[in-house]
Length: 229
Image 1: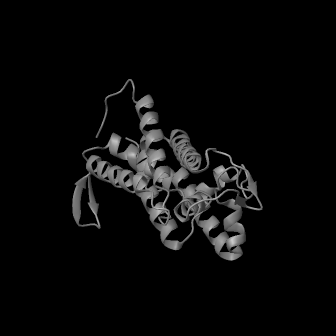
Image 2: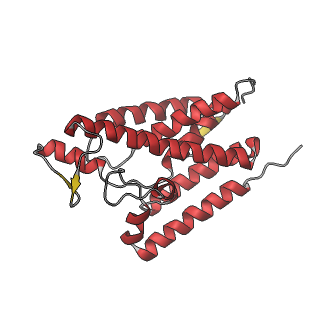
Image 3: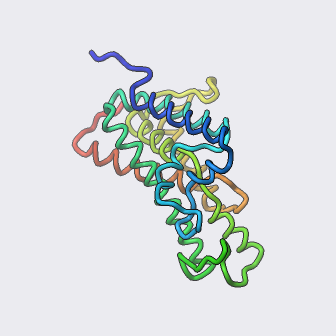
């Protein structure tokens, strides 16, 4: 029987990369953070590499700590079950899928306001007369995004699908089965996503995007199996 690895190689390297990126942004400040964050594609600050780099960048100590703790807690189990190659594939696909959903939702919201998913940007501003509420929504669309949360939510979704009846302890005290935790978190993300509060700086649709891509990927890999824990 293979020994359970509490710090498998992909998890270990993801923790190191995210930790080093966080230290680098602390050292070099907003100049680096704004360079590697993900902007809406028509922004003059957008670069294609941001689609990947934003997944390894975080805005605060709490942000990186809780994402990496969740990644280790749930991801280590998945990597032990799937192996490093499949786990890394899953992590990257859900992270990129989260970014795609995030950008797609912003494109839809921008179309609602301006009639175009790619209106002309002059000196970093959109032309046209917009209400105060519309300007708030536009600013939210053009606010850069950082974080591994989309991929981490995908990891949590996979854990809930493969180990639905495993007991987890919220704040180390309150027991809840993994499948119910996933359902609750999904409902919470849906609620706040459709609230569409421009002052909410959490990319809820990115979280949901990671879960959606994760769901279909797990279903595809499990199409000939019925093994759950």
